[in-house]
Image (cartoon, rainbow, N blue to C red; front, side, top):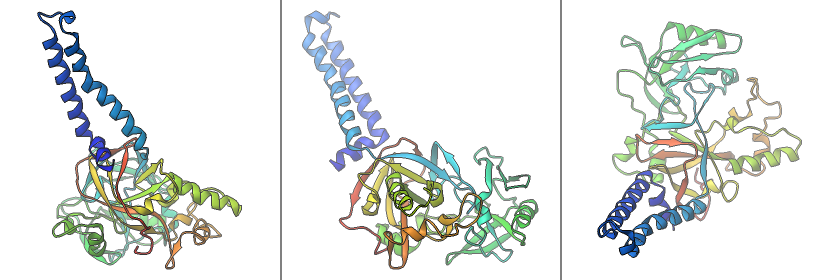
Length: 362
């Protein structure tokens, strides 16, 4: 059943089946005319319709079997700042295009996130990247800022370190630095991985091997300014369980954006079913599930840029999602192909799953 769903869910395979069916039907119809009379050979004409009938039967069966679908897609151009909800996202080796390709840092290259400055989560993307002319952001009570899509050729290059990995990043210029320095009231820079020199920040080799990547594949999958992996997946069913627990302790329900996912799916058979997934297919892209995502304080930041006074939802999640002193929600993914587009509505096929969750090993 998994193999059937796998091949059927690949967009190219569907096109080939439709084309093949139409060709057979057309040829059969031509042979049924002698000379061009349906009444002389109706059986061959009807046989020509069989491939099309089979196609629609299989399509209906597979769609009922594969009920997990993509319901939301998000990118976060600047690390720790506001996100952009998208209908479709193209992949490259760093993840979705424009996702976490910019980051705020101290002048010495030390990265800054909403963990230290929760006000960063209030910075909104006014117009998203993708036009070739950069994008625009706006912090509360501040003017709109234009951020260039690429650093200038004569830009300063800095060695930065993000969670133990060191790599080069480019300064986007004086205007952007002054803007975020004013917001945070300290001297900072806005850096980007979009520069003339090649970017190199492979994912953690331990988890690359755990996910099944071998040899050169371990260095092929890179990451920009995200914490560790190119994609983060969550499910609506898991969020519903969290919100159910929160309401029982008289806390407000939370929105999925508190967990900052890239891919949100719905239709799972139960909450946290994704803890068992090891390999999935979305569109024409295979994803390997590397590890569960252990949560820091960021999900406790409210929309107003302040931490929740009771540290929710993490406080409540410790009662049912804590393993080895870590609280987990969502899964980190690496991808095996690039250049494909993932879209809202795409079917999610679980190709491989484990008999136990991956929380203990994450």
